Length: 201
Image 1 (cartoon, rainbow, N blue to C red):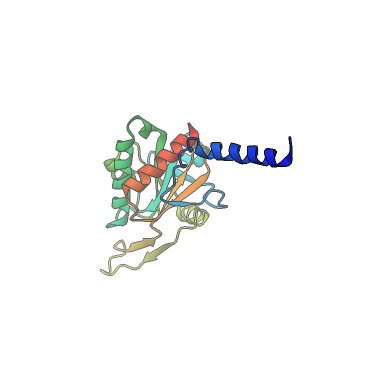
Image 2: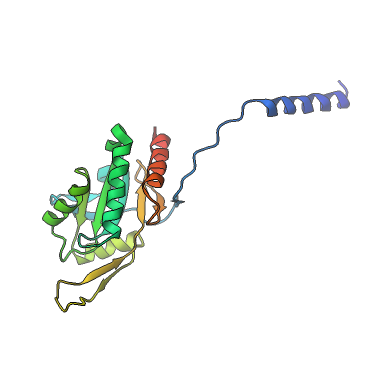
């Protein structure tokens, strides 16, 4: 077979391959993909029942971590309400997702208060709390900004807490995969969690 014929056959094969059915595009995350990040790898706090918890406890589940406090006026309840909607939309797969609400206000957020707060959004949600040092370590590990603001009313317990408003999502192997900006909405959260569930399947 001369070189001209060989070249023609190669071109024909390439053309036929191009006419074949194209594989569907891979689903895309709507949040920021932080796979391989060197943070968000650990936490050691107590849940709202008093049980010590680490990320290893939730291996096999998609873990959604959000930092906030029970007296937060808007960001925290909005995020938790969105996650409750996501769990509902997932149906049976909702049991494969664990939402962790990490308190940045351990002075006021008692375990009893956390339990009342987070389970009002969904019974499976867990509130996590530690002392001031444990809270600071956890915030640093997830690169979360936390700053206590003096009370404007003059009441010692009337202070507020500024904090980063993003959400972190870890896959079923406990690896940090996504950072979700506040305001992304339930549809974006649902889309991305479904992708992670399929990747694990």
